[in-house]
Length: 396
Image 1 (cartoon, helix red, strand yellow):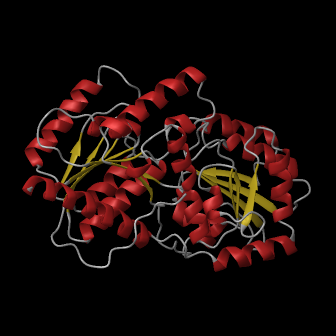
Image 2 (tube, rainbow, N blue to C red; image 1 turned 90 degrees about the vertical axis):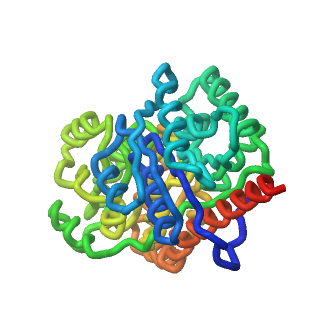
Image 3 (cartoon, helix red, strand yellow; image 1 turned 30 degrees about the vertical axis):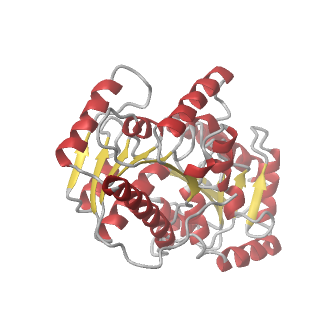
């Protein structure tokens, strides 16, 4: 069920004043946030950004400030609900009051989405929310937590949200299963710029990987959601049969210590490599196959980066996988389970010369499907639509 807005057919009558708000700064949500702020700024809109320094990555803050926005505000927002939400809410109110009026307020991820949508009485500014994966998508969340988070998202969607943007059809289907209002939701798939191949040879050489070696690649935060331990176990299983192969994992996070220990204990330290020295767009062209063993996603930027690089992708059956991967054509979709036998068999099969040639040819032919401009066009059209609707109400 795809409810994307059509692309605009005429320029905006006037620039919009936009407030973009994000609590986490890493991963796909941070990437999307910077792309959106930069894209709207370059299109002539007045964009101000709010981020939380609590979990902010230094590289994210540096890149956000380098965009050249009129203002970037730091507001302490914490992931977990608690008393700190009250001063965060009041700080956001001050930004809206002192730097407004804004035509659109757009909250990204659950905490910023909640704090920006809750509002006191007064002039209404349209609120847009992009979850970047509902908390209720997490398969490890217990039933009680699922009910609580689901009820909160349902209430906010019905009573405080002008529009909710899902980043894949899978995320939209999940929102509908929570009985959120279909008429106020749409799908706008994330987009990426084509990655440069300049660093591919350098990345391989930095690990002593020969040009003709077969490289399985992982990009992502080293957290339980991304399940990197599944990939290490799968590679250990196939390393003996797929002789000239390496695993390169690009990322950082809370599991880094345990993953390094697992690599050390595997006896494959010369074939498994873990680094945070490169970005996803830099790393993807260095891989032969991108592997995503995640437990849940909405629409991963890693999938889009891999697709834009023309790389076959192996992914668990997560949100967005069936949007990007045609199973058996440009990649494979495997069961989302901690039993890594199917993942290992699929990785081994993808490395056989005939299968790999077929996958790589198909992946290369499909690499221009998810561009950054399309994402910006559709989001801008939605902004115009809601801003115009508000202007009509104010002048009626």
